[in-house]
Image (cartoon, rainbow, N blue to C red; front, side):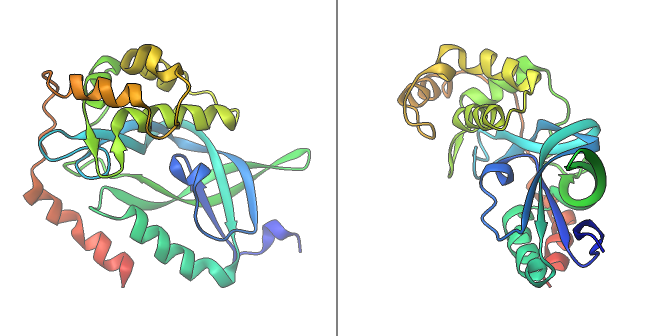
Length: 230
């Protein structure tokens, strides 16, 4: 029986920070392409990259298209521990849902299909921002800042890491150019650019798109978080 046929193992698909910061044990790491979903800045963030008064935008795996990322193979003995960690990390407000998504990975000279656990977007969640024009996304991202830092740093770091993995996302690169201009190409600390800090301070005083989120409605999705952590 080949390693791909061991059904007890778990595959996890990363399309954002999981690609470069998994923080869990894995036995195999493969470049992967998921069908039926695409990577997008479609989730309003009121904690990590924004605040309730000035929400930012973070990545989600939304329906339609394809997405290139990384698939991690988790040994059966680590699966329970890894899933508990991922649920603590990803299932904060119920905006993500666990989905088994078909993915293609390279096995030697051939391609093989697997089912990978992926955290996809819940479109009915009040934090789902939808398919906003790039110009609108740029306006939201420019002035937002949360507990994890500036939203603009998050965008720039995402594009940089994708390039390091030889994954080109043209629409994200265009978004970075619109939102950051020359700032995206300055050489400094990758996670806290002084130029980004200064620009965000200026942009934060400018009008932005209203992404007000009705927090009472978030409770409708809290059961997903509770059930997943039981």
